[in-house]
Each structure stands twice: as C-alpha cells, then as structure tokens.
Length: 74
Image (cartoon, rainbow, N blue to C red; front, side, top):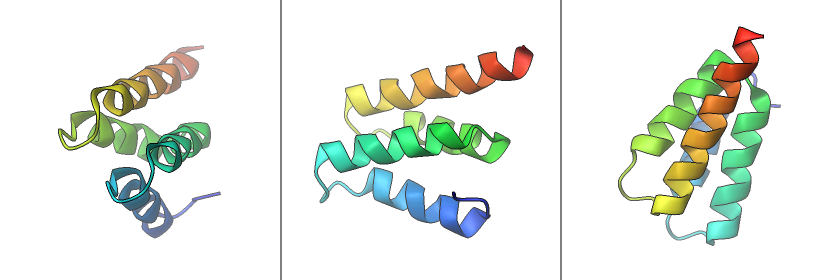
C-alpha cells in the first residue's frame, strides 16, 4: 500500500499520465480510493480538479472521494 506521501505522489503521477491507457489510469484511481486515507481523499480531489483527465476519470475520482467522506462519517 502507498503509506507515505512519495508513493501516493507516484500513484497520482500514473493516474494523470495521459500517455498511459485509460484503463491503467482508472485502475490507479481505484487503487488510491482503496487506501481510504485523508491523503488519498485529497489526491482524489486533486484528480477530480485536473482538467486534462477525461470527464469520466474526473467523475470517478470525485465518486471515490465522496465514498471516503461517507465512510468517515459512519
């Protein structure tokens, strides 16, 4: 798991690398979401705000960010 900021930064870099196939970027977004930490939440919000990603990828990042927020409330 990506427990330190450097590893999370690498995952964000993969998720925003437009040279990689969309499936790889989407799988990376899902992996970040599975971390379910505050840092992962912030990374997902950063991805959702990245206008270079496709609309679907941005919406997926936002969906997972919402999921982390909802799980924290329970």
